Length: 218
Image (cartoon, rainbow, N blue to C red; front, side, top):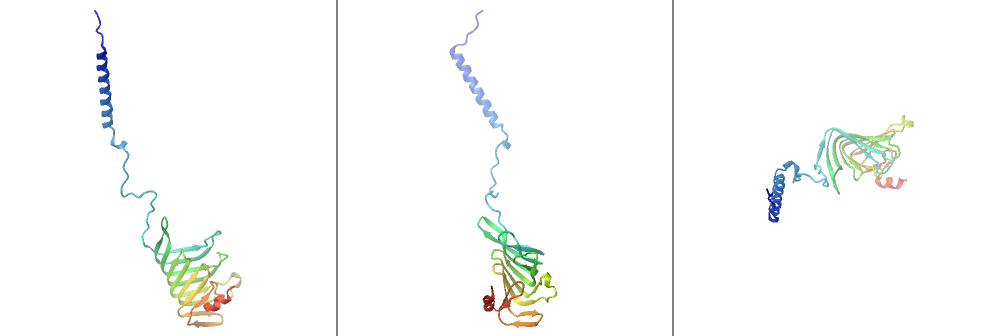
């Protein structure tokens, strides 16, 4: 018996049929792909990695303390401020906000340190309120301000000098205390009152009016 032979047209039909079947399989496979295989689109409200996270305008805290250090190495402590409550306003800088900024502190105590040796306290202070500007490196005390010198270890028998006033500002850059309002100085020789502003160094070993202080400063 003679076997049937496929003609050229028959081969074409089979090839066409095979191609149709392959296309159908690919289409079905694409439809059955799980949704989890698709990448999730980014959330519209999600912060971009390059965008800084904004800080609140005001940060309120309870009791705490903060130190200021020199700007260059070796880093030495310049002052310590302790408080019972505070409001800190972060400073906006290029690239975002920084926790460093201005702080308003209530019921404060603290210390000013020696310029060359941060293990030695030059004087200790207390006041009703304090404003600290870390950027400008300034400290402002207001309300019943009291500053007491801390004699060196080799001069403990020397009586401390006490400065009281309504307002006191201190700049770490020039290390000058500027006192104003009901200024009084208590020392071994007695008590002195001043109607005008008074300047002093943190150790309270040099005290005088602004003009005299500038003239006598080395």
